[in-house]
Figure 1 (cartoon, helix red, strand yellow):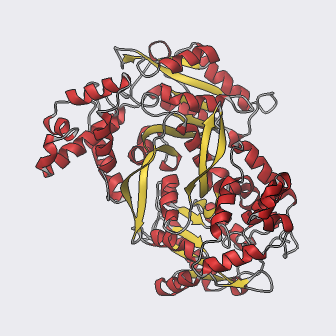
Figure 2: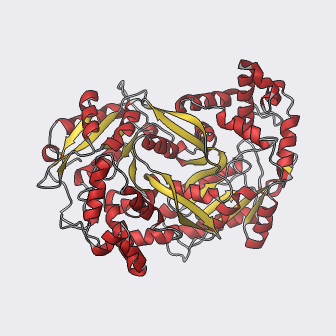
Figure 3: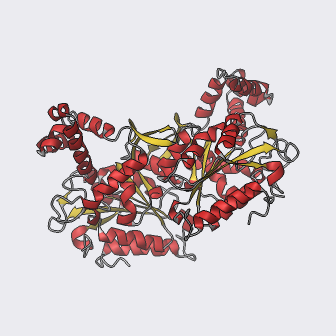
Length: 303
Length: 303
């Protein structure tokens, strides 16, 4: 197992941790039912650059909406989606990282209303159809082949050691669920994410435009507790939005492991630390395991 | 299996249903991962009379709070809890069934603030301690022996047939979780219930007084979807608050079974239909399985 991991400190720390918590005679033994492992998704289990996969999915929806309603073509983000010129979107994100979220407001409003009043099962079907054909814009592969092979191996390694694995992501809960089984072997009931409210009508559930949870930062530990009712002993992330989930995992009474994926491989994936600066500082201070894609992974994506 | 079920239409309907959805060669076959079964808790898995178990737990908390703060003794519901005279509480509930919720307001406010700012793990410890000694007021047994034996057998029967079982209750999610494994063999991650918000601080999570979800009526299907991401094929309840969960289960594309527990056994448990009238009407109209405690269960509680 862990065939795509180079021999090195990251792999050694993971293997040592798993051996110690599964050794019934050792001081760090953890009962199987308490072996909870949580994984961020974007940038931790699959590629999040040049944009979140969900954003690509939503831009296609905005374009459809603008095709159906010409008045939308004059407004952002529909204008960008319709024209295919994403400059406005890039600028909005850059302004966000400078602390200015004004351009994010119309984007968030468009995201919240994109699937308003669509049945939850119909919504899932649309997402499954997207993944049947959608390609990553630069990596020359389908999105369904953009999961990190070493991380999927890590999921299987933990499960083989009686861990229960969960995704705890800032991405949309109902966006991830139709594809996580195929990508990662994780079923919908083990996917925690951001959500809009649902409404019940005549025997069916429909998506609303009411924001419910943005599963990021301090919301991540609260949402994973609400879903699991246990404090994890293993947590993996890659950005500042994962800090509180990692700290919550670190502050349990027993042994735990925290891990960050460092994107330092421009050749095979991407090279960036934007949005991960504080998390990487805390990793140094707190002894969290930092996984370098360049040094620690012999393979990144499935062939 | 189902040893405490009398031979009769209810048991036959359950067994026929399970046989049909597990028969790989039959027209009603359902893949194991889609065999989701959801159970209400109060009045479906354990006794809910003369009052909800959680209300007993909370009244003890209100009494503690009134002992610590004499000013509370002049206010309801603390006055009732402190004095032990529960007339006010009975009247408040009776008024509720007459459509007047004015007296429920101070009760709800007291419930919401009862464990404000208590750490989630400390809260769980207090609940576990309550169940170590608390006795049912009239049945002469601990609350941990107030689960229905035939329903626990039904959970095991479904699980033996590759169903995944969940509790979906109007009761408090964090109240049920510390005891559901011992009572029903259901771990915390398979318990869905009402909740207050949680807040993260310095590596830990704390209970707040902010209402989050009242998991009853049309909220039940929305909450179970948020947790499971699949439409159940088996649902069991006992009251009007379960109607939408049963209807959501009934409206799936494939086969399903809906079941109501009818409390008609004054000698061994309680005899009441208050709060279940509409559900029982719908059971007749829709062919839901009605389980009579008198006729269908040879044993009610563990000996």
